[in-house]
Length: 290
Length: 246
Image 1: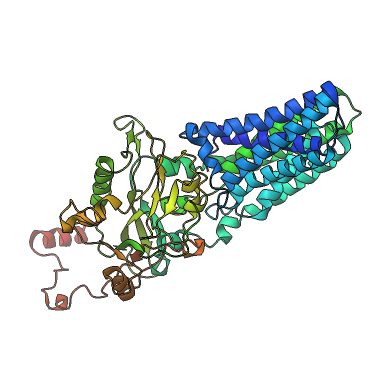
Image 2: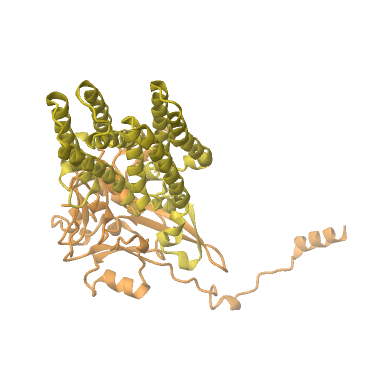
């Protein structure tokens, strides 16, 4: 799949933002006053900014409100509802906490559930697609949630839990890559089933319908990433998980925590780039590519 | 509403005969022409005369080479457009309700004035049947020429999809798959019509007729034809002999 900048930024930022909001809703850290304002501002900025970025890849962003209508069937619509509900509930929770000093705990818990629900809905937009076998698996949701929770813990300054969560997420990411690599081959979709001509012999793409590219090949047949995949994965694991965990284990200093966050962010963006770039859409088979 | 109907009264669709298709791309052009001049946003081309031309099409013709275990390879031209699936995954993912499947005839359509151009339906389609128009930024797909097939302003013979009407080889057939006595149902039964990517669970309506087996002998009369000389004669025979002697 084509790794669109707006989608990489949206999923990375909103995942972190909703993770942080979930932590704050659960009372980690138990902040009040100005400190609470800063934490919530970061959470809302990442979550809201991400959502805003997601509208940049729309052909008609002016019609975006229509996307709230089909929650019965569409994960994209459900994501919209959950995101708005999270921001509303957490907004109220934050306002009570910052301006009135009231800790409305049940409201915070509800906000945390909604925040993680939003991340789950985002993951299901990808995990529901049978056309992308690498994504069409429960581990896609597990990974999105794990990245959101561990990143949220890191941003919330929960050092010890963050170390454990980040390392666990790194292991999960490794497992997702290992199992994902064979999923297209295991899906049973190949050029034989795509053309229905497999019974006659080996099918080879002889000539594409046109000499140039088209929307489909630009959007869904992205093969550039495959060459350096091992190196990119190693760099992403080191930046996103190993380095932050190492920096957090060292005696606490704000500069180290900031570096850990920066490294995790860089790793996360690389992970998301790979998430899209490595995903093989079955339509590529019609073009003799994967 | 992007929930799929549990039942459609008719199942309109196409049968594409891979044995007959000559790969002339006339269906592609007829489709582009009709759907540019009529219902909905025109099918645009971007940078048409530049270095990187790209355009939206609702129908494209691929060509595949098939290598059997024994015998010569075979070339198959393969037109591909929306299959109007019973379990259309493109419809249920749509967040705005712009995509829908009609209860009366099973045609999958896009209401372009509701489409936000998110592209998720194109991701959900395994066949590559949907493309965002490079100019209008809305999702385009085959409508089965819904503005032709019911159009009483057209002569009756023109009330079928433009691709079917134009095909010079008669490789495309239009009809109702829900009716077991229809032309398309009969063709599918007789020739063993195939579903594309059945494992994707989309239950496509359109069917493809596989190429017929090639005759083992070229012609029953071939053995009676005069044999082609295998021994050189005349000047060639002299050259052959001379070269042998050298």
